Every structure is written in C-alpha cells, then in structure tokens.
Length: 410
Image (tube, rainbow, N blue to C red; front, side, top):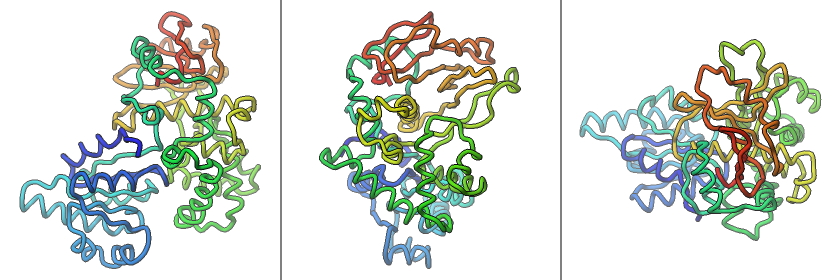
C-alpha cells in the first residue's frame, strides 16, 4: 500500500472529534485506509456494502450500534443515513457522562451530498470531515506533500528532486491515480476503468436517481470527458446527448456528488463583475478516467491529439487541489475569463493574497503568454508570485515575479 498523506489528518481528527467522516469517490482507497486505522488504533470495523449488517443498520440503528460499540469504523455509511441521528445521541451521552468523547466513530462513504445532509441535520459541530482523493503525484513519487504555494526557491528545489519527462507526465495522466492501478502495475488501465464505469452506473448512480437510459448516461460521461477543463455549457451538452437541460443538470449533480467531476467557479471582484464570464469550468477528478471515457488509451495518442492540453490542465489543477485537501488546508480556487477573452486557468486565494497559475502542455513560453495576469493588477488583494506550470524539465523566469515551473514542482 502506498502511504497516504491524508492519514495524518484523519489521526488528528480522531484526537479531537467524536466522529470523523472520510468521504471520497469509489476506489480511492477509503476501505484500505480504514482497515489500516482499525489495526493501528484498535477500532472495530464493519461495512454496510452488502448483507445483514446493512439491513440491521437501516432497520434498527440503535441495535446495530449496540452490537458494534465505539470505537468503531463504519464503512459505506451512505447506505444507512439513519445511523447519523443514533450516533449523535451516543456521542452526546458519552460527553455528559465522562466529559470526553473524542475518537468514537470513523464513518466512511461516497456520495458526499447525501452524507453531508446527514451531518448537517444530526451532527453539526461534532464531525471532522476528511475528503479523500485518488493518489497524488507526491504519494506516487514517495515524497512529502504540502500545500502548493508559488515560492520559486522551494518550487525549483522540489522539481529537481524528481525530474519528470514529458512521457512520464503523459503516462501518469493516461493511467490515472486510482490506488489499484499503482499497487498492481500489470493491471491494464482500460480493464480497470471499464469495470469502474459499469459498477458506478449500475450501483452508485442507480441508487441516487431513477436512471431510465443507462446508455445515454454513459454517453453523457463520455461527452463531459471530452470537454474537461472547459466552460460548462448546459445547452450544448443537452443538444449533443439528446436530453433536456434539466436532465443534464440532474445528472451533473450525481457526478459531483460522486466526486467524479468538480466545478471551478469564476473569480470576480466588485471592479470586474460586469465583464467576467459567469459559467463554471468542469474538471474530471481523475484524468485516467477522463482519458478512458474519451477513448484515449495511451500517452502518445494523448500527446498528439486535441485533448492533450486540456488533460494536462486537468491534471495540474487536480494535483494542486490535492495538496490542500490531503493536508486539510483551506484555500479559494477559481479561474478567470473576461469578455475580452483574457483567461487565467487557476487562481489561489489564501492569506489575503492571490497566486495566478497558467497550466500548459508545452515547454517554452515567454512573457506574452501571461498577458492575462495584468488584468488583476488592480485587484482588491495583493497578487503574489505567479507562474506557468508546464512540461519543461527546468524552471526559468518569464518576467519579474513570474516563472515557468515543471509539473514536478507541485
């Protein structure tokens, strides 16, 4: 098992919160990590994936919790939302009796919106929420992971520790970052993703909505994969798939809830609100899944095809966001595009400072490639060091305060 950065955050939550909720998409490694925690910290473990345990948890939550006393890990908690209220009563009673209730329950599951509904209704303030992503580049490379900030000296030093070739980056993009694909190097990615999509549609999607046409839903996923890293235009998607805009909105909500895709909102301030684009951009949370759905099965095809730039952008945005979520650090993530077609792929707002980041699939750039950065010179916030992250194997300056950085600098 590849060590996971997020384990430290989970262990910290256990020390301070009565309940820790670990959420993430199918196959990101939640169950493997939970079993490791159970062994390391002496928790019981029970899964609601199938069988009698799920039936009892749904039918009689109080009895289920008496049979599985704290400290315990309950996996696939989304199948028994009634447990949330019962758990609330137990953790509150423990607090009254002993004055201490930290580390009683770890709950793991997918379908974040359903889980958060249970949390907000029953256990607000009692739960530490940990989002678990597929593997990060740093985890695959076996190095420490910390939130990405544009700091040229540390960025350059980090990039030099693991020099990645263009083929290395494209290979990582096409294979994707699900743990099983890296734990089993001989496993064909196409076989993994074929099973993944079939199971996701048959089980996860069908449990959330009454899906009448599974083939169209798959076509919908394939279409979105072909536009990852681009603005979300509902009318275009609806026309291409042959369903209503309302249906597309419903289906997109399912993919967001399952952490298959994420939406990146546009950045605006009072001074530019009238001229900026209002639509979000859509990103697949894993480029390997996106490549499979877009029928791109090898690095060379991706490198020479029209999707190469968008997949590199998707990969870079995902990897930067993972460095924050894996360390449970907060930041605001946005993109910028205005009516004059100036665009910045990623803005990070943290500690009252903006960092501007372009994501590129080439190697050689100059100051003309960051002209859009000037659009935020009069921002309400200080604009700090900024960069292009691209496929160069060495960092180099573009203009004062702006560098081109290798992907491995993340």
